[in-house]
Image (tube, rainbow, N blue to C red; front, side, top):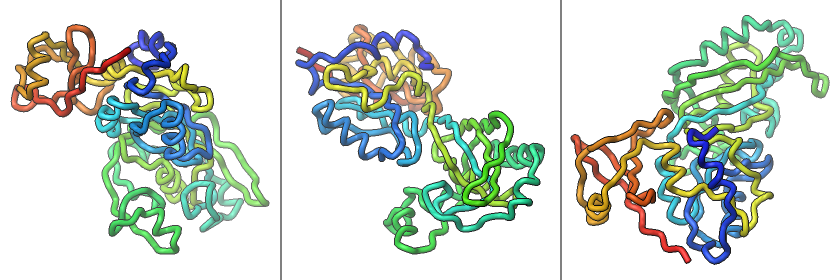
Length: 329
């Protein structure tokens, strides 16, 4: 749930037709399977009648769940959301590795069925524990990481072998949901496990599936993936893109979105003027967010509007971005 439950009232307010092109805020989308993140952005541009739409981190076409879009002025917020922790619910299939580390490609290896079915819950729990905490992870070879100026996934699709360097990530929770279950596909025996994972930005869940299968000696890949949280924003507050229309965009206004996620600072009228003239402010009273990984500070005017995103620099606050005063009517 969003930290500020009062946001729900704002989420349910329909957009006014006369203000459609100037509306700013976040759209919390529950992405359906087989939609690319680019497809979602393109569709949202048409619904909202604006080219100024961006996202705070992609989801693979196979994956479902929370995709955060920014509209108009709120696209400036997205930079500060990309690095927030995330939660995923996933199904991992043990017994085979694949080219893409998920069900969307052919098998690389298939383990002997008897070996797969011999894996017990204690072995799985031990392997999961080794992938929990602060670890080094080699990203999936079909990630969007650039190698010599080209996306890794593009090189793999072109037949090239891609080897990426390991990088530090944090998996703060890797909990199994229910008991492992047997699955038979095309005569092959597998073991499927469901899990919920809390992790730092930059974690590849498909790589966790790959590494879990490798640790157990049978290979592994994803068969389902759903993102349920980004920072303070939860998929329970999102809506399917198919359910949105120009008269009901379900916009989470910028000031409400910022209050839910960031540390906050209330401004006087004079401080608003000072910020808009590029001046720094005294630190003053900053209220810390319980969820934010990024310690940027959202600053609000006396009328409650979002004025700027600030950073503590040597005991003074400097602006990282200042938002224009929005005109309505």
